[in-house]
Amino acid sequence: MTDLHRLSIREISEGLAAAKFSSRELTEHYLKRIAKIDPQVRSYVTVTNEVALAQADAADALRQAGQATALTGIPVAHKDIFCTQGIKTSAGSKMLDNFISPYDATVVAQGKNAGLVTLGKVNMDEFAMGSTSESSFYGATKNPWALDHVPGGSSGGSAAVVAADLAPFATGTDTGGSIRQPASFCGLTGLKPTYGRVSRYGIIAYASSLDQAGPMARSAEDCAYLMNVMAGHDAKDSTSMDKAVEDYVANLNATTLKGLRIGIPKQYFNVAGLDAAVKARVEESLKKLEELGAVLVEIDLNMTESYVPTYYLIAPAEASSNLSRYDGVRYGYRAENPQDILDLYKRSRSEGFGAEVQRRILIGTYVLSAGYYDAYYVKAQKVRRLIQQDFLKAFEQVDVIAAPTAPTTAYKIGASLDPVEMYLGDIYTIAVNLAGLPAISAPVGFDQDHLPVGLQLIGNYWSESQLLSVVHQYQQATDWHTQRAAIAEENA
Image 1 (cartoon, rainbow, N blue to C red):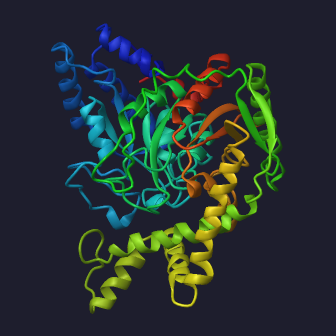
Image 2 (image 1 turned 90 degrees about the vertical axis):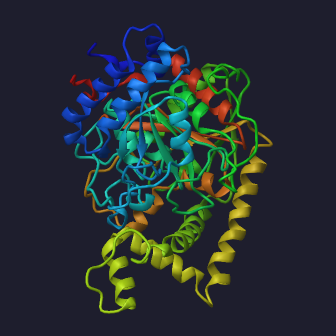
Image 3 (image 1 turned 90 degrees about the horizontal axis):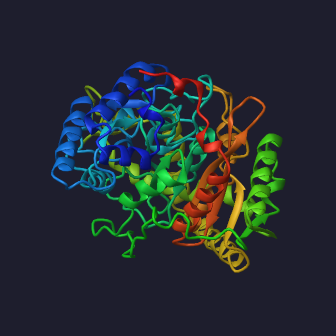
């Protein structure tokens, strides 16, 4: 079959169960597409051909023995921030270009236990720091909708592989929008779960109080299948919540849109830099939800102007602490022929880290230093609590909050965005991480250049099932999630 890559996760699962095709045939199909198309997209850092085929054969054997799950034998791509045993895990950095992980991240292990087939590891901004996937040591990944544009970041590789039909779905991580923004830029659905819903064990840390893993796929239904595997308590992660996991697939129609109160923050639609086409598509999607029974309620989120400065004090501070372990001594990149231990530290870090990572380490070290800790870091943490309280107050009036995912569509590769301008592009996503809330991005149309636009829905704590259900019902009434980039139509 030449169109296996056009099937949804449910259709793949049913096809495998009915023996219309085997996991090996499906995996070979994707590997051929990767070999043909990915040189143009540059989404994969490592393609695990032999591992994937061995896992596919094992999945077929389980199915023959009647021991298959719904996902047994379905291929997946992992962001190269998840440790994978025996496979390079680089976090997009020269610092870890030679690191072969001795263990699996919990998300990877849970995928293996469910019978998922690992196609490989995909590109990302270095240490998840960036919004374009251009800061990767391995070069920029390209947006399948327009190869001269970025796919977003930091999970740009995860978005690109799905948008180009080089994997049915992918794992990503979201520290300040790194699942939702690339999903928006590439016309996909991406879910950032509540902090603590998915284990962080084995994820190379950027900012530990903000990082959260989640699924990226074409539809809410496809995301729900992957969430059923990813979510759950993990004793290895002290921030993981011991809370029962819902069946996200079974609950896709559980939330009724009739009477659903959708909050519209007036501050979000008056942000400087919000593109007119993005605003128009988002407003059209809200009108559609209103037609389906939802009620639009104008709300105030008064802390909006504090989002960016608060995030860009807390996240770099945590990054500075987390990345101090990369010193050229224990593992990772080591400078050659150091004159002494200080030279080893300095050159290993200056040669191993890229410009954006160095910039954030310097900012973080500064705000944590004596004399500035109270003035900046402590104050940012106090404002963070106020941002959380602002959201909780809003959820007393509404069920979900709507916003654009990003103020613009994808920018061109190499666009001369200065760092501050790029940070301002995170205005709609970073508060969700600061508050630890769940949020989802879904495609709702295109701009004048046929670049995808995303709608973001933010939920109260532990409302992933509700968010998936709302988007699923929207997607039953629209076809934006079925649209494909031209490069995705190429057959291997």
